[in-house]
Image (tube, rainbow, N blue to C red; front, side):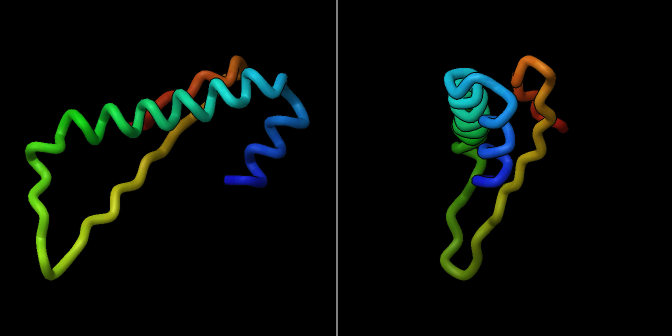
Length: 65
């Protein structure tokens, strides 16, 4: 992720890059908050969640479903 951020910083305004990463974090947080009542804790296992994003030319992130 660091390499990707450095690449974006070489092409775009730092404020815009920070905005993009903040938006990605917000999308992840809101999506997990929306299902938190449906996620039950387990003593013997864990779940790993992954996200796929596309970023347009304006650095707007789009969640891929």
